[in-house]
Length: 417
Image (cartoon, rainbow, N blue to C red; front, side):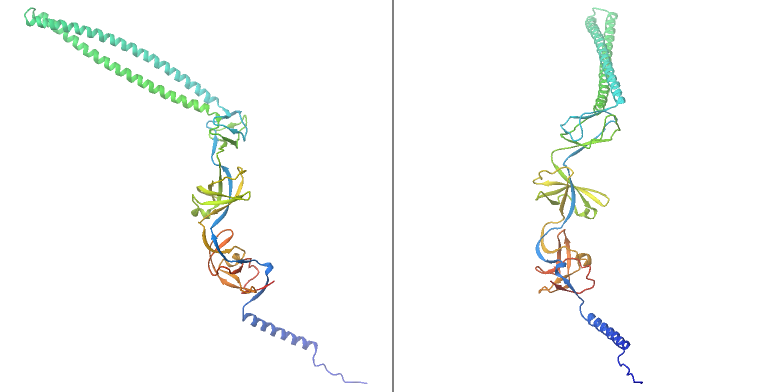
């Protein structure tokens, strides 16, 4: 028997359609509601860092690494080339000034020295011979002068006597004239002999002076040659420790080649590498400090090397006051190099927030501690611990200083414990 089947008013298809429409309406409504106010995000306080703004001492400094080095180092180079003949000490030895380190052999230099010594000896012999000859010549000239002077005196005596007799008409003109001629000749001969003696004396003095100067030049050259040969034996120029010795027996070393260095034991300095960016702000007199064995020590810049290599330049720093006990050459120190004097400022602890905000804004925690909202700030100088806060916050304010990487465009954070 047939019966009537009633049609369902709410089919599955109709129900799904209605549900879809309702979902779209809800999404649109939610979007409207969401965009009409501030975007919020729940944040677990255990996953963030909340810091407090404080007023305190601020000093701008940068972290740098320094290497401990001897205060004074002398580089040892080969003054003359040669073959290493003998080593007297090994690397690391403690030396006194003048102690031999090694000896080079250079036959050419040694032969040159022998030749120069022979030349100087020959020159000295020739000077002695010339001096003896000059003395003999002077003696001969003096004897001649004595004879001429004696002849002049005799001619003068006869002339004066004959002149007196001639005036008295005791002798004739012929005899007087003969005496006068003999006198004139003796006078001219005396003047000539005197002139020759003076010229000979001056010439002898000049020749001896020239010979002495030439001999002095040869001796000076000999002294230099002896120094060159003596420099083949490398000696310690000061008291200190020999380091970086690079020489073995039998090796050939060229002139000017580096052989090693001598570190004076009168103290230490610290050589520091600084980024090129700070070149205009780093100068002699700036100070720094570092920690060693749970104690802080101070340093001061004494020298700035302006040459830039691979984006960095070097400075030499020396200890102010106490030098750490147990510090060693080659040891690396982590130094805080101060770029300014200590001042009082608002301090904002450093954190990861800066990477997303550039220091232009920050999330400030509300007074009740339940939310955090954006506020504009202005940051000045900074060091490894804090930023110098110029405006936007006051002492006692609490802010979120951890990273904002996951916050996107969130305007407000809801803090959950």
